[in-house]
Length: 582
Ligand code: N01
Image (cartoon, rainbow, N blue to C red; front, side, top):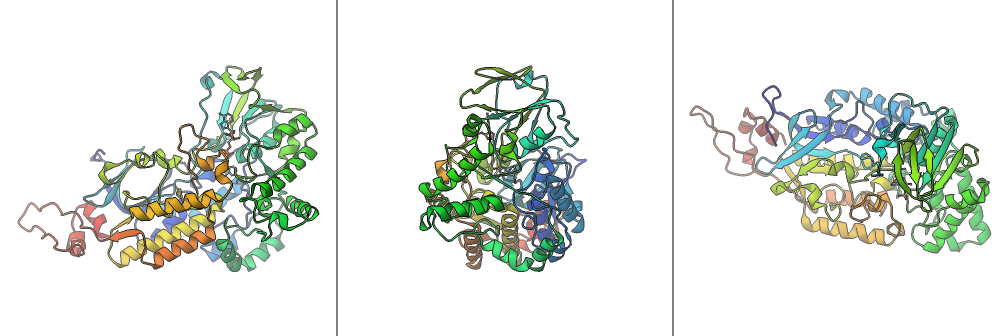
């Protein structure tokens, strides 16, 4: 890595945090509580992460408002007023901005700055972080809050450059309104983003052509305004509700059934599916406790949804194409929609089954499949993300011996608890691979991770330790455990972004930990209570300061702990200052 220019002196902080979404903001807040100096770098021109970028029509969270929010501040959760059952993107973004202001976080956040490289210096036990704006910063800790679904992916369909209309990716939507009125709009992709965007686009567009490769299961949201009474009820019981939510498998207070699918009669089963369908949301997949484990049980729940699709969509051919048969319900992220299936009854909306007629190329006028050319004014790519590892892969992260993280993870990511990876000391991941992350209410998962990291850093502060690293054997055991637990479920049976299958060449491993957030939290807490079992926390020698030009050179420390002495922390070397802060 090059040294910084004279005009930009090397800056030193205790921690660099990558990203200012929900994770980065809360991490900054906690680091400040520990009296540490932190710098957050954020690629966007505003805070909010996912909710800053995903401004596509219909963008909305499918976790309910009263649960999709921070719990760390009782005052914050009492004062913020949500307006709808499921929060719209703009409302979540307002909330995140409110949090940034309320806790005075902005002064340590540098916007429009992407971290492009981070190299670990083993002799100094420090990270040097470089950005696309030429900043270079030295830090004891590097903390990734870069997000699991932030590296958008536009598939390499030949000819996109020739398209004379406009094209968009849902995850990088323009900030100015996009006017689809009277336009012919093609939407590629029918995951959560597509399923939300299609009805909203169809509301305005002259014509919508949906290019579907794989149909997905979607449950109605039945979104509605939140009443003052409902909010009050939640707010009165927040401490107890939050506590309960943290113990669940998904970090969401759902109605988790304790019954198996075949413990009840056919009539009772159908009644239960219907009840959940009418209530709406992803709660549907918890109708019985074996849906994620037993193929026959899963198929019962799936068939109920297929029947709903057949009953809503008037054209039987279209209904058949929209009804998923290739994967177990829930093993691709279940979608939650507003009027998705109904939209296909509209005269100006059509469905192209790409399994039957794949896209050949994009041409000047639109999209050409194997049987015809669809003339379009705009194309919307709702084609997803290089999930969980994509944002990390885009940074040149190098640990011990200059080894690249990407190279270490060639066969798939390896972490201990999803928090650290061997060979990359003092690098923490928030919602990293091997943690429950994308299988949860991510705000709850983020708070759990950030609290754990803050507790670990505090432990190090108290003992003047300066290097934390996952031990190889602990990592091996955790990776084996993550796989073992996943293999007990139906998840690995499906090619999805959970397994890396949506990215050509990406290794096929089940990326998140499916053991449940509640169980996972117990494991993490026990590890901490056991003195950070499986982690090596040490006081490594700080770098010897450069000899002073005069005779008053500082004496070299004799022991590791002495090497962290005050005399060195007074050194003018900024690296040495950082080395001694902890
Ligand atoms: O992305 P996806 P997403 N040609 O990967 C298709 C979260 N999220 O942005 O399945 C044609 O799920 C692809 O087809 P296939 C949530 O966790 C949450 O929708 O690969 N099609 C698929 O249909 C979610 O799971 C919320 O055959 C191509 C689609 O594009 C995650 O983000 C809202 C293609 C991609 O679906 C990602 O969702 C939005 C190609 N070459 C997102 N390549 C809420 O909270 C891909 N596809 C509501």
